[in-house]
Length: 295
Image 1 (cartoon, rainbow, N blue to C red):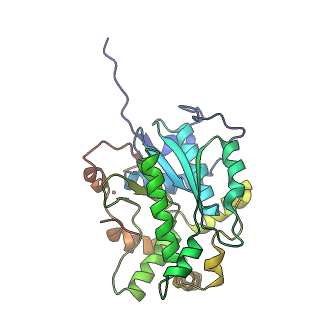
Image 2: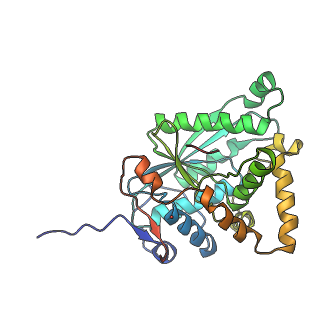
Image 3: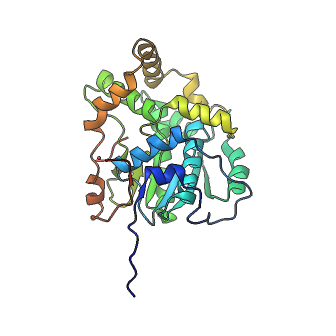
């Protein structure tokens, strides 16, 4: 008798309301991750659908700084891994830049209790920056160094997808920074293929507001690492200035971020383009009712 194989797709409604795990975590966790609210799952589901982010069989490595955003995304990915009718693996990596006041090693015990495949890399990024940098931003240098480490570990450990936790507020700030300081229009892409062609980078929180993640972290008691980048906090940055500007504007215009998202869409890439870039493999998409490497 012929067996009909179910297509590797799942809907946002399945994502939100399914209560029977389709498969268990690879490692036996000591406790369950926090359950994300529907107010987070809906925009994440739409972003995954619009930009074809997750495929059946993907090995996804999450960049975990220990801040509220990456810890929130960890809970969301683990929820999807357990409840969505596609199979994918989730691992995480933390990079310790050896900055005074920042101690991400506290995450090791938490990740062991969750049963997540975890990598911890330590490198004296601040010391290297002080020896090399002149006028360049330390934050930009640190981000580039961390990205290189994440790419290396992803390749060594056979992960094909790198998940980053930038949210809609981050995209909006990048949009203004590019216009104000670079004389161009640009922002972070929700999904792209790196120049080498062997890794995809996804940002499932592209439609999520920062305040939603802060509320989720507080309500769930996530073990947020204090001052996930104290060096940046000590030196005001262009991004912090844009954050303040946007907050002030949003007070007068409550639909500001909805409007900005609409404005940024032509800069964020198109659904399906990433599939073609890696050989036309079929994507497992989260559909809801019916979308050159960037920083």
